[in-house]
Image (cartoon, rainbow, N blue to C red; front, side, top):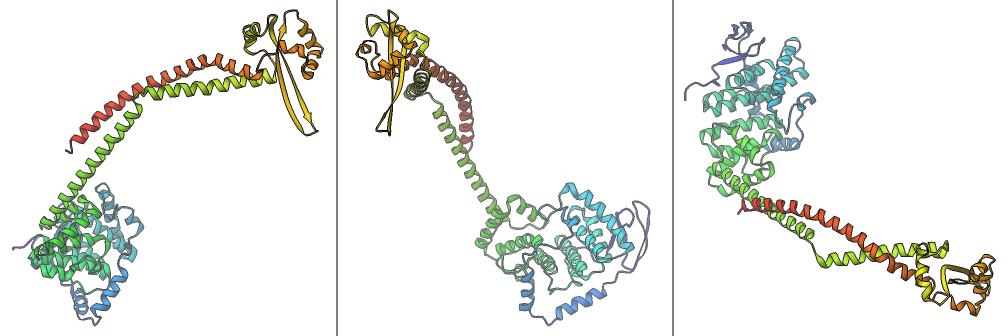
Length: 488
């Protein structure tokens, strides 16, 4: 095809003042920027040193076994990027909202190179160029990459940038330009970043030409055949999978693409395939992976919707009224409260403080049924008995008063207590049968209706709250069932 924007015969650099693309010539000279009218001077393009180094690299006596061993030692190591550059990246890529910041740094660092081309300054300029290039339009990208090639003194940096230019030319199907940009690049470096850059450029050129055996020669048949630098390994894998499709190994291509999609997600892989545009890659394998991912997502969504419906149904069932459960809760709640209140009232008030339970009402009701002249209030006598100096037992007798008032007088001078301790027969007439047990049972019976009302009120309040909650849950269930219906 004809000359493209990436033709090696062209020379497009960036204006030192405004950063706009500037047409120059391979012979050098003074050139005026069409945007800011600044005049820039450029020396003659000279690639002789890099061409000689590339020729020496091809002829180097290091074996492929030794070279691969060195490359594998560097594999899976984090990229050596300055912290200030790494801070701009998210998952190894420059987000759109940070492009302006990165570009401002790029222009500033370029001005620093004019003062001193020290390695830290040049390293920042190199990495900023690499991460910014995909965000520029074609002309600015070509200018930024070629400017960095001419400004950077480090041969490794120039190698990577020339490979990027070769890759852009191959994507534009300018094969002559791609070969020209690759010519000064060492095809057999022992640095993993440089080696990956060369493989990616050469494989892109081979893929654009339809030379798929060359692609797998460069990138391997399997993912682990060739060590690759982390940031660009997925882009290399895309080229390799596309080559497998065209070489009749479609099953392998589909299997590996599905693994990639599972690992990185559909959007990440679609973005990486898009970086190879206008080359059309992995149509069958990626289409299959997208279909499977969509089916899996559909199945997961269907399962989640079904699980949500079941969970809401269970919740609604738990909120539904159960008269048997309500009755048992009423009985149990009433029994617990009655026991607590009855025990406290009997044991504390009657047994310990020795007061007439229920403020005298109890004695007024019960005493007339004990004997003819039994009247309130109760007279409560308690004592302890020690047997053989060890065993001590406590006793409490409860008596009704006599109508004549004799027992009240005896209570005042402890005579009643002495007769109770000695078991005087005349007291049997006035003694309340069962004593404390009678108090406890009768007080329990008295409290039970009140406790039932309290428990019923609490349960009624809870039932009303559950009815409101049940209505809300019913709406949630309706929405969940509608959502489930969307998935068939």
